[in-house]
Amino acid sequence: DTGVSQNPRHKITKRGQNVTFRCDPISEHNRLYWYRQTLGQGPEFLTYFQNEAQLEKSRLLSDRFSAERPKGSFSTLEIQRTEQGDSAMYLCASSGGSFYEQYFGPGTRLTVT
Amino acid sequence: GQQVMQIPQYQHVQEGEDFTTYCNSSTTLSNIQWYKQRPGGHPVFLIQLVKSGEVKKQKRLTFQFGEAKKNSSLHITATQTTDVGTYFCGTAGNQFYFGTGTSLTVIP
Image 1 (cartoon, rainbow over the protein chains, first blue to last red):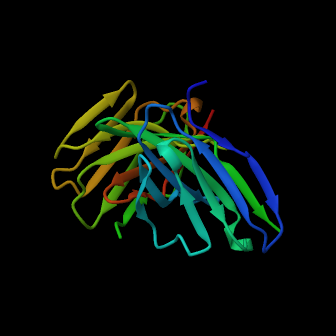
Image 2: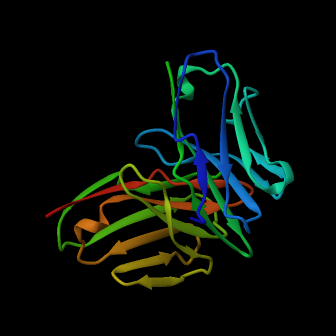
């Protein structure tokens, strides 16, 4: 399967704990996006990488959130000191070339108890 | 930041009826993309429009970009149960902004 993969698919954590999610984009794609989606809402942009450079961060991304994309391949999204309001689906997408079509992964569903 | 509004929020149609969702912005958009998200699934890219007044068709789906590049529409002719899902418009700038989505239910 050469699509976008995300791990884990589900994560349940207690408030205050740190969590880390991983996204593996389509191998030839240089652009990678993270989104957060809650029930009944559209995906909210969190951050964007072009290769290993983090070019954009949403104001939604508080200092508890950090994302990396070492070597321009996979990416990680870490949430420190989780809060119940962080419960959501975290989606990763990638795109490449001159066409900005985004391919989404299946998402990681986070539940903070 | 970019604000992209979609109407309606929900739409129920009988199978075979047509369906339209509208995407509106207060500012000029450089491009518009449309995605479909099935219940429990992730967004899947449908199309991108970049030119003023552009119209593209995919089988029963017709996508239009307004002349002023501030609005867009997706029209489905003769809906089928496989069309069920939420349709999002989105636009890419420095960030990527998704609209609020229109949830389509098709009643067989």
